[in-house]
Length: 251
Image (cartoon, rainbow, N blue to C red; front, top):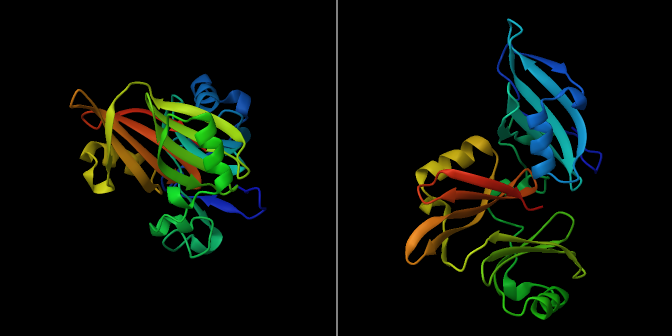
């Protein structure tokens, strides 16, 4: 699938050896797939879809490729149209390697977090807009995106994600957690094993960014994990036991 920069991006591990891939029109996809895409990737552009068949021609699932915020995304669904995982993407030189190279599109897989910005290093136009419009918020974390926009994580009477252009214009603001709670930052290693297993299975090429444990009256309510997967940022929420609750595309 091609990105907006006219370079070719390959989705890998789309089916099992011996399976067959047959193209299918968007209108012929199960309604569950269409609803999932609309709910999770608002404004997406459909690119191509395939039915995955076994050797015996039994339907195994679907692969759907879309663009969202000018980024290509490959998604796998089961035979009933239920979401399974986001497909790993690679550039051509990395197909038989580790999946990324220095300076490449997926260079953040080196775990150096090049998209993280210290709050003290945010441009004045960003901090001025934020402090003027959300004076009661406390900034906790900041990230940059490929389009030079800024994603700001903050707390007030909940936890919020605010997306601004590089010139300080609001793109969107989302309340990630609705209650007055206490929270603490977690490392990737501190996440519950069930949550880590879900992330590895569902987002095979994900890069951990930051995570929070959410508490109410001293009791763990759940976990919020921010990841970058193939240049798309997601928030993934889990309950107190680490069981998946919901995901949200941030950018």
